[in-house]
Length: 217
Image (cartoon, rainbow, N blue to C red; front, side):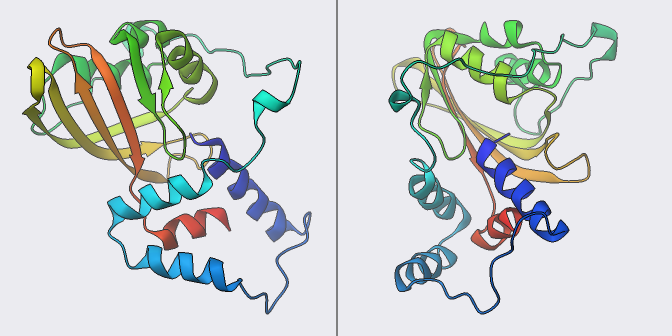
């Protein structure tokens, strides 16, 4: 799950509970902010998420400017037992790498999951710059992807240059942040090398600007 979405969601909950001062009534957005939101509302969903990602990618602190610090993360949960795992099916896609990506992530089996990537493989989460290299991608999975439930629905595969394969899958993702009753619309864009390993995967949150703002409230 995206940490920023979780933060804004929790902040909105605290505002509703009166623990944090809410936005004052009558608050007016600046002219620049209004212009940006107006432009985003006029785009299709794929363009919206790209603009939003580029707008917020540098929000928050930069760990490069923190000096010495200790990384804090949740303990990595154990992978589910094989008997507890369920396998996904994707209409239009039967590629074993893609199916194993979904199944291993759902099972918190990050060690098996990372072996689907090339050594220099990359992953781009929503609102983030690409994460490159198996060690960095594995750390991202362990720190931010525990207990997700991916529900892929349909996809399409097409050949790319130099023997690579492009595969796009759409579906939903349920996260611990919002509970099992809330499924966010997701698109996964995979690029597989000729050996069937993941060279790159980009993950897009398919939501309108209004839906994203509702999550942030």
